[in-house]
Image 1 (spheres, rainbow over the protein chains, first blue to last red):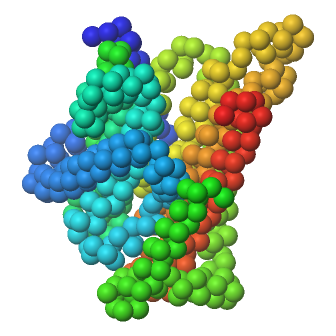
Image 2: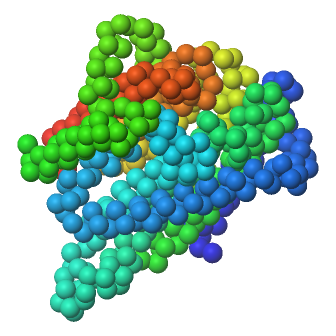
Image 3: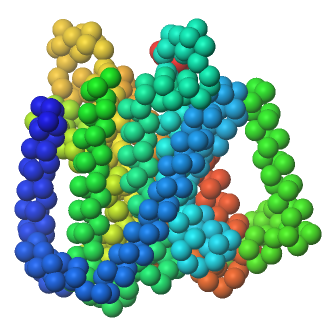
Amino acid sequence: MSGSGRRLIENMGWLTLAILVIWQGLYVVIGDIALRSPMATLKFTASFVTTAQFVTHLTETGKAFLMALTIAVVSGLAIGFWLGIKRFASDVFEPFLIAVYSVPKITLYPILLLIFGLGLSAKVAFGAIHGIVPIALFTLNAVRNVKPVLLKTARVMGLSTTATIQQVIFPSALPEIFAGLRIGFSLTLIGTLLGEMFASQRGLGFLLMNAIGLHNVDVIVMLTFLLTGFAGIAGIALLLINRRITAQI
Amino acid sequence: MTKAGLIRLALIAALLGMLEVMVRIGRIDPLTMQAPHKMVIDLYSMLASGKLNKAIAKTMGNAAIAFMIAVSMGVISGLLIHRLRRLRETLDPLFATYYAIPVFAFYPLLILLLGLGDAPQIFIGVMLGFVAVVVNTLNGLDRVPRVLLKTARVNGMNPFETALKITLPSAAPYILTGAKFAVAYSLIGVIGAEFIMSTGGMGYEISFAYNNFDNATMYPLIILILTASITINMLISRWEKSLLKRRGLQ
């Protein structure tokens, strides 16, 4: 592992420690009405994750998230490559992408629900639109910023369009494309969970909303902990891969 | 207007026209989507009747408060963190993965802590926007030309003066990028929170209208939010571009 990677993990350790200290401190101040201590949360989590109820909801969320992520990655990359190569098309469509990126997408969710109906497909669609736009925008910029000399070389060597994308554009744009995928991953996860929190009968988001309704602090704190932990660890792992890819070039 | 801009307008017009036709001939159920002209009429009568003015004022007001807190705290924190190298290095992984954290999962906790009023919603908006402002402020401060800082030193400016007269204006375009994110995030935070659990505001009204098949209220509200966020975003973008242009950077 590279030095910068080791430092990143070391800093991550300090950060985790700081968060645990703050968490425990908050618990001391607030008490059992609204919070559980880190220790109690860990114990409750360990006993809860094996229950059939949890596994069902986790599977549902996992399925929705994976489908949304697949759609977001495939269409995001396709849109990004297409607009990155075609200058005029990107002049026309890039402002649309930026507008969608900056809009509070939660307002669009009722429309998706009306189109797709309650259930898995609305959630997947909602997660996917969160992910598509950043992936497309990052890919677009990455492809557009490929050094002209590389493209010229590809032309001189008589590479076909497919071969140029495969052997020249993709490898040289990879670090930035990966940064887009990283952000797309996070936003798709958030989108899927938000979709479940509003108008859904299954999944971890639903479980969280249900726990809020029943004022089940154990479940609320546990789910917050699990989701934040998963997102944080996945985010750091992707960041490490991203740095390694960048270092290779 | 450029050629690309014209094509863009034509595309939007074509899309709206297509939607209008599809609804009229019944290909799209009016319970799913209303005809665009109907949405505009509904929006006008909604605004004219004033029955949702309270909700609109509440949401926009809360988002504005969240935005102002996020930007002011973000810029100040950015200035501080920029000076503390060790702290910045430790916080780096947090900044890099912050947006992977589902902030809305903290909403129930915040309700329990701050009550079911406006505070938890504003807090969520601030939580989302704050880090974007910090990251972009740091990015801008990294790019302040050394010669400017040297000039400040030569002229014997104190740190406060230097920040106010040199570093902040120099980093302004980057801070504006952060502010743009903060606009979007404060709206997302406030409206998202209203959606999930609240008793007022535009997010609540949209979800209420959705549950009652009241498309005549839902679509105008959605259009209003989208228009507001896109307009503010475009205005800040324009300001940002004019700043960069004046410096010959774009």
